[in-house]
Image (cartoon, rainbow, N blue to C red; front, side, top):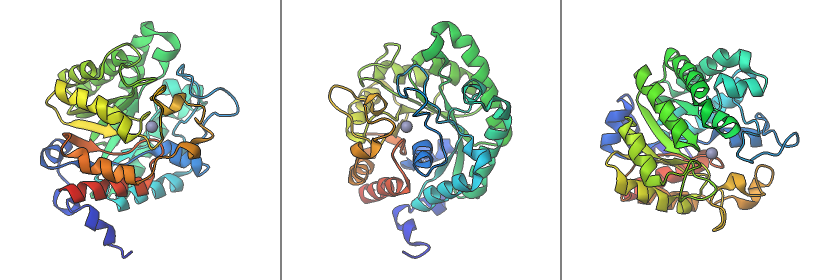
Length: 331
Ligand SMILES: [Zn+2]
């Protein structure tokens, strides 16, 4: 494959790269990237927490924090390069689980400023003007651990992280992997207060019918759109086929573009979330979804009204290239 061969899959790159995300969303399906932490864990650079505690309980166990941004910057830089080369129009700074609350529990709280700033700097360096850079904002895990009375603390932590991301120069935010709509609302209010556009995606578990605090996908979509999200949808937990029905529910409830970043792991009819399956996190290779399913998902993106399309856990650059190929073949 020659140096420019992959551009075949992403004919929009050179026409649209400097436009803001709100403009890109009006033109065609925007191709994101992801997922970073599982891929870097597989490469030996991220700690899953497995071996010390039971990961995947839903109560905030497990590590998967982004200190790789300061400890192994070359590893993160390389993964950014791979996504860009595969056609990503947006690179996510690896700031997932980057609130001071979560970093404190992993022993990195004092590095909160450094980790967020370094992650954004790396993504911007690699993007080099050819892709937008999004700050990733995820749940604090406080709601899972301490309940709804902790939402005030969540607000302080999320507001702090968004301030750090804004200071570092992100183009917009991807607010993702929230289990509780109540905490997502807090995050969207913080984004609006900071004046940053936000793509907002919930994660549904153990089933796609309701999020953890009992709201349907349609209700979540409406609330996120009403709070100003520029695209609303779902990320993580489900493979593309399993995620599609919940995206259709969201599509019927709102007119803003949809965002979808599915995982590349098979789920079951009894459990729609891979992080609740016994294979998480040490046997994920046994439930890996093929890339062809991501080509197919790229093809349906346009007809399903998906404006922002990327991958989550289990996706490396080959999966993003598959999405790009699907979008290209459907265009
Ligand atoms: Zn994920």
